[in-house]
Image (cartoon, rainbow, N blue to C red; front, side):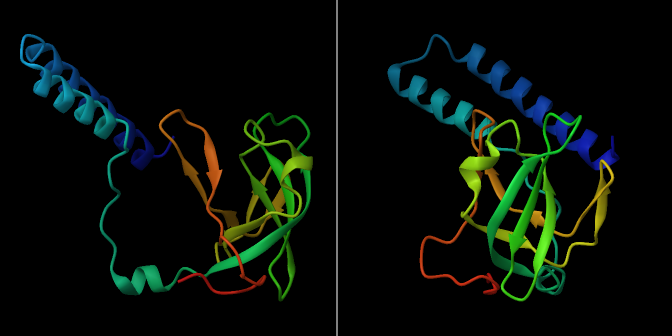
Length: 158
């Protein structure tokens, strides 16, 4: 595991412990305080913010609209799907850790948001040339970050 991942998990654990301690101290308070406790528990489920970057750092990221053309499970990998994504100017292979949440046949034809200029990386022997943006809810379920309508493959996401 990378240090950044470990630090993030430690921060989440500490935040959860702090909130549990606070909520146990507040058990004998009024109904208004119960509402505040619920808000605090909701906030504890949101992960801590990563370190600040400059606009120039953000401006280096090339986010594009793409459409999933094909999807298949990666052999001997429970979490990985091999996707073929049409970015308008080319079709790319993207390996994504979403197989626990989506069946390949369910996502074909979906428009998605792609980090198009991420350095290629081999996963299970397959070169992945991008990353699909996902949002994770409080239950750990993944959701595609995608345009609502009217976007064309290759459009820049700003």
